[in-house]
Amino acid sequence: MTFDDINISPKMKMRLEDAATSGKIFHAYIFEGSACVDKEKIALSFIKAMLCKEHRGRGCSDCLICKKIEHGNYEDLIDIRAIGDSIKDEAVENMQERLRNKPIGERNIAIIVNADMMTLRAQNRLLKTLEEPPAATVIILLSENAENLIATIRSRCIIYRFSSETPDESEGMLLLSQEIITMLAKGEPFYSLTSKLKVAMEDKASALEFLDAMEMRYGLILKENAASDYDMQQYIFNAIRAIEEARKNLHRNMGIGYALKCLILKIGG
Ligand SMILES: [Zn+2]
Image (cartoon, rainbow, N blue to C red):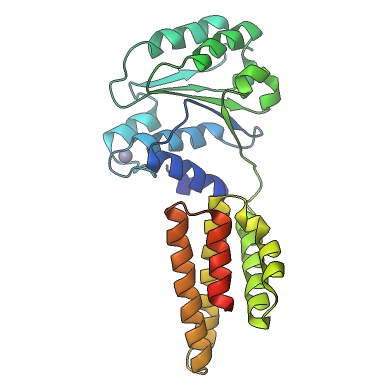
């Protein structure tokens, strides 16, 4: 099981993959989502992605580390869940105890399943670890509603919300790319194009998704017009080159707005 086997939006997938690949992993996360969302699976896939040596960023499911994570017997993985109807102070205390030991591999990782069920005492105890996390530690809290956690815990975690609906974000980008392509072809003014593009400029993942959608669209147009129109072909080749360049620029951490504006100028100009 990797990110490909779980139902999460391309945007979320990219965020988790980026973190795992770059190694820029925060010490605490809250994965929030309704009961229909298999947050445990998402967390395990993320852990594989950050620890797998065969395929960093994705996880391979075949190496020893991935297998152990999947079977719940990876040495550095601490699993905390409710006994009865709550997660008590002692459970968090045991976790703290284990986190004091150095990991055998790269990191100690704790998953708190149904973190909403932590008693207030347990939450206050956890807070201490979040305030001064031991080195090489990642704590992932799985929660149906992060509002059930005290604000001081929430403020020390990166919160990712997962929805159970079929991801429609990529569909949004497909529609947007179609609109932009039409606007470019009509030669509409730069400011209307850039204001339309605001959604794609929200973050890097959205921008990359938009570029994928653009490239796919142009690819389709190229196929449809393959033999007929030389000028059209050149126009599209030029556009695809500009998309590739924008993608490279984003990976080089150029400002998102700047990269997309350059793209529009190159295709439109
Ligand atoms: Zn692996």
